[in-house]
Length: 257
Ligand SMILES: [Zn+2]
Image (cartoon, rainbow, N blue to C red):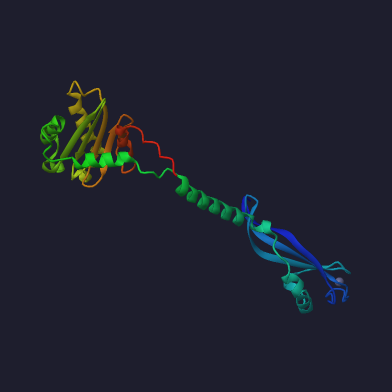
């Protein structure tokens, strides 16, 4: 059994002035108490009940607690109530408590010493997101081309008249952001196609096709698909973080004073 309960002797004491039911002698009765505990993989978890037996020191007959005569019960009450559980019967609870305490401490330390410095790239990203427009600036020729391209090729359910675009180039990197307010209504597996259309457009520019691409496709509120040199993500999690690499690695935290 990898779990269950076990018993261990926790006390033994002699009770005088008690008449034995078997031999009618008044020799002391030796009472032994066993503590039961629940174990998992033989690690005691927590104590449960107790088991008591009494042995006549004269005739050596034993009786179980349910058969203890009333004089034995009253004579042993004080001794029995003083019997304490050894702490190791609580080992499992102590371990669990210890683990919880350590977890709490480490979370606390993480809050105190963790890298919670603001990431300036998040603000840069927000500034770019705000520049997405239904009618992109004419100087943003890629965005203008994208708008035309989507108008021709994308299925009506995306209601392309409300779509917004923004593109920017820094060195050998290009970022393309597009918002499709009804993207949520497109099957999740098909949303990636919307990003792939951006790829097709970028491939058509000789001076751009070899740049590292950071493509973000937004729904009404949030980023839904991202494509970076690390791959495409079609999920609600950690997308923004991927796009932040456009700005380079996160600046090192300033040492705290
Ligand atoms: Zn006896």
